Length: 265
Length: 234
Image (cartoon, rainbow over all chains, first blue to last red; front, top):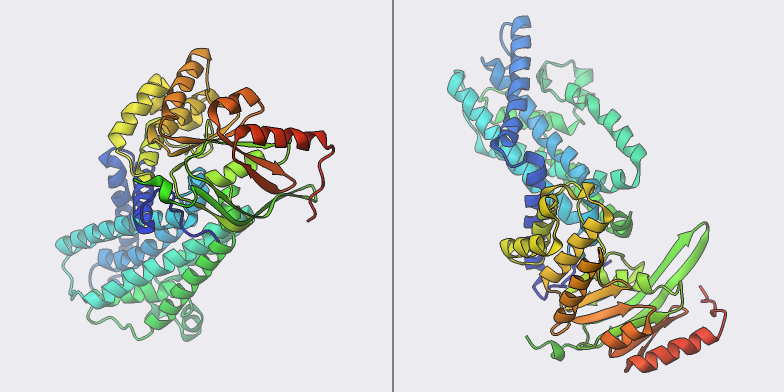
């Protein structure tokens, strides 16, 4: 396998920093465009979705499963889910959308993944901060922020998203069939990730199966970060951490093994 | 900068490259280790299909070796006129700025140079996907002049575009040869003699270096006299 190209008579780390910055700028121009409207859209979409969920469920139920604010309950679920999901979806297509750029010897497939990961993680964090700040300012609720749980929720969601994205980057680029299949398989994830219900409210049989869905743990951690009374005894940080690290390792090995095919297709 | 202290400008370490098409494997390079000496302008010679262009693309980094590695100690261009590394969704200007950033160049300066040289007018701010192949080639040529590579790779074409633009390319290229080196493929011996002072002959997956371009041309013509090409054992 080729080590990082040092064409430029500059240390490898400096070259990689330049490449990552160039890719980041390239992603920003196509993602958001040059106007503020592009950035605003990244905020409007989740706000509209959370508002819709809150409105719909507040017609059915008297109060959310935890706390008093419907908006906060659905926001904690939806943001944990989408923070993971957006990273996984965006990084998974890194090579496909950047393939010509791999012709520059300094640009590697991993660079394209890392650039998209950094951009989406920062965007997701900014959006989450804005939405939570807005909800806590508007709706009164008994909230005590737990920095460790919140850090865990965002950190593990990022790790898991990067892992799934890395594995898919190689698989998507090599197999159109897998991309279609993955789309079908991952679609129902939203419905079984405790975004709009509470894990504790499920029957035992369902809990035993759904416990293996790592997104349940992310949502649990996120809610534990806001609600002092939330029961997070089902959350296993170790499980998600091991799964995330395993996926990242698998993704890196796959990418290294297929580096030539990724660059030349 | 003391470039001549380095042992080689380009080093091939046990490089193998083969292509498989219709069930037939064609070996272009087989376990080749080679140092290209610094400070020389090197002609690459070989019969049709010997893999001259593949070697050039391996050196440029647009193709990757199956085995082994290629070390580049100089800033090496893509083959002149090659535009396969442009992102079709980005404009000419955005592609230019991307290249400036990865090669550590001043973005504004390169932007101004390329915009002026490529003569694309308003199309410079249009997505490259909408360009004709001629417009792409002009952008690629302007960029490769603007980045100021230490080694230029020429695969038959120096200039691109219409006669006037070709003339401008050739003039810019000749000026650049004052401080940059060239690796050149050409079927035209006169062109090779004009630009090169050493030669590399490719035959049956092997590379032979000759210290003068005349010796390389002679060796190449001697190879052509022995027909057909000796088969490379896999």
